[in-house]
Image (cartoon, rainbow, N blue to C red):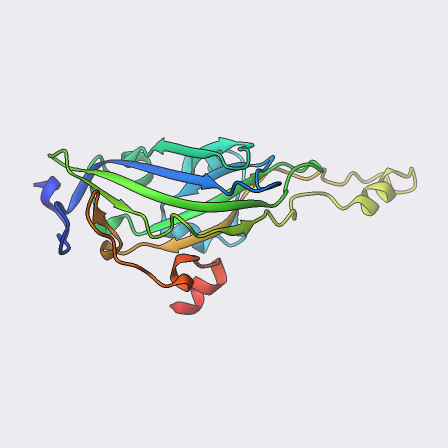
Length: 217
């Protein structure tokens, strides 16, 4: 049966889930909100993006949009379409193996501001039962994130191109969703809701940048 596929880790009530929710919280200090949109992805292949960013229709096709311009201290919970983002209505816990946070920024001056990620969690319902499991090890990462702003046009070249002697138009920038935080997830990171989760050291809790994860391979 599909609901029984996968390895049942010690202490877990199931091997697969039929419902998944992602919870993200921004830090509550001054300036910890953002004008940008915050999205998440679950495909490990997102780490292999040549540019580290998505544009246009690819953004909402591959990423779950959590909020547009969330304020400091915002707590966001969104259901995950398992079939769309993980390929099946019932998913083995071992196949929920990656979480990436993306910052979707416009090319305007107010966009691309820094913001604080307090933490992110996953909560799933066991397939065929009411038991619940969760990944809570990243609920207190407390990291500062920011889009690189490479999607914005440079001011001086724009002014030069505006002079009649240089009529060739210059691109005015573009909106892009850029990978700003990520971490792999193992089946041992899951625990039953209401059960005891193992403690992890501060380095592990903080998550990894794109380059740091690649260095571990």
